[in-house]
Image 1 (cartoon, helix red, strand yellow):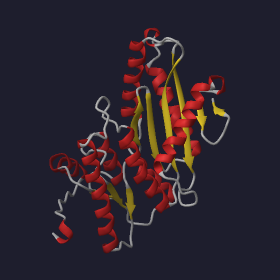
Image 2 (tube, rainbow, N blue to C red):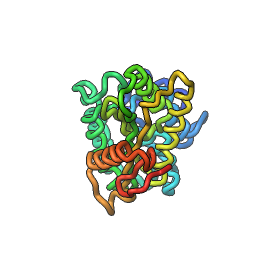
Image 3 (tube, rainbow, N blue to C red):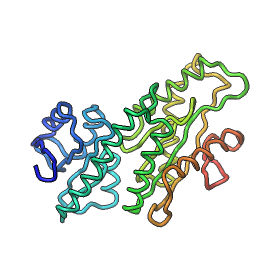
Image 4 (cartoon, helix red, strand yellow):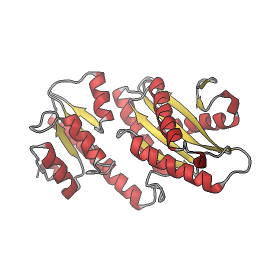
Length: 281
């Protein structure tokens, strides 16, 4: 095929899911209008049903230029980008080359140890790798980008079994409740980071609180609660990555510093912002 791509076509959502599972594509382009479903639903199904790995780029094709709200909805459904007419064929090929390189690099990252063996999330090095990609994307599209760090603080002598159980529960909550557009990494024994594209400061707080609520609900039985295991969080946000250029790893560092502040200043609230001394309650 031209430009070295072999193309597999599917004309329904169900057929697309089946082909994605069987052929492990390097990139997927989804049309918004399909006989049996719509493109957003198919994007979610590709991710939720594990038909694709999170490293496979999914591009959603819309018949008209999307609004900002429509782009954010597509991102949250698992699409990496939205395509709309007029489409420049040469530009599309260059984008595909970039996305495929990122996918191949992600595959190589797993093979070379950038994934945490226990959780199958990215480890600290893998998370920094993906953060650089997301920061570049956000800068090109003038979009917000946030990083939320969640973890457990130990107050005095703690029960290692209780801490391990809390970490296992956190892993499960992040896997089930994390958005398909997010990139999740384990950055310490009891600490996780979520990179959230298209997410401003208010949405970052909502994301942290939603995950915390799910975790507290899962750890609500008396045998699960231990007074020495306390949930803490920190976050940082770039409102417009084009106006405020910031390298992705720096965003992780700043969110981690906010997390550390929340652990030290426990009377200030469980969640801290890097840029604001007050805490979300």
